[in-house]
Image (cartoon, rainbow, N blue to C red):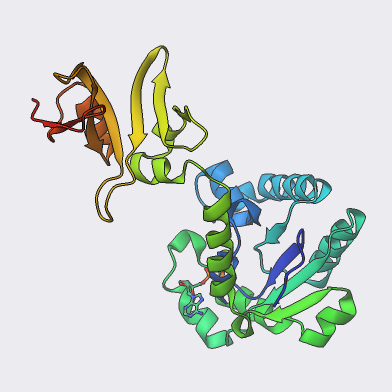
Amino acid sequence: MHFPEPALIAMVGAAGSGKSTAAKAFPAGWRLELDALRAMAAGSPGEQSATPVAVAAFRMLLDARLERGLSVVVDSTNTETPVRLDLLRRARTFGVPTVAIVSRTPLDECLARQHDRPASKQVPPDAVTRQHAAVPTHEQLLAEGWDQVHDAACIDLLHLALQRAATAAADSDPLHEIRAAFGDDLTAAFTYTDANCEHGRFTIAGRDLELRYTGGEPYDRTWQARIGGTCDCGGDLWVPVGTPAELLAAYRDEPDDEAVCGRCDDVLFVG
Ligand SMILES: Nc1ncnc2c1ncn2[C@@H]1O[C@H](COP(=O)(O)OP(=O)(O)O)[C@@H](O)[C@H]1O
Ligand SMILES: [Mg+2]
């Protein structure tokens, strides 16, 4: 299975058929969902008074992404022909290939799943039944003009998500270890100070906390923070840090752990 990129990927299926679950195979930034836009506008995904603003935001974001050659996943029922034709028209305007992913979950399951949803996201049974009956066949979708048509149950979307995550983690975020250990907010204040990404510092408004990578044993924490004071040999002192709480303790010069001298490697007990 190979998806073009960029692509306009439209989920097609009745409410409760599993579209949003399948759409999670794609990055969050690609997904456009009216429920989410209604929730942003009005605090609740089912707030129908927010539909006009959600639709307007949806159209603007769809065109903005297509115009820039960015992929979009349209996570709505897309069971009505005019809605799909409009998507195809917009994709063609920007020269972006189109993919339909169809969820063909049996009607009784779609209906039963409504009960498991929060009241604000439940769709009335007659609407679900109408949507289910309107789901086009594979051949109809190809004839309509979709470049690729897939049945969600027949393609390995988990494989796709794992593949994408593995590639992204390996090459796009040199700060991913810092982020995983210390969180987004602190990572925003962190910069590496060497080309090998083994030294860096958290800096905010003239105050800083230095970090070094120790490449320690497996299961050991691999970062150390510099604390105040020096070893008898005159070297800097470092303590292991793996959590924000340990960073705080190091910054306050109150580490729980013993410190290591950066010059002679002696271990000193501090605190
Ligand atoms: N393949 C599946 N097997 C079992 N349950 C599923 C599957 N796909 C989705 N569900 C469940 O069905 C419910 C509706 O799925 P969702 O993706 O929100 O549907 P939609 O976005 O099409 O309305 C959710 O509770 C979800 O966990
Ligand atoms: Mg959904």
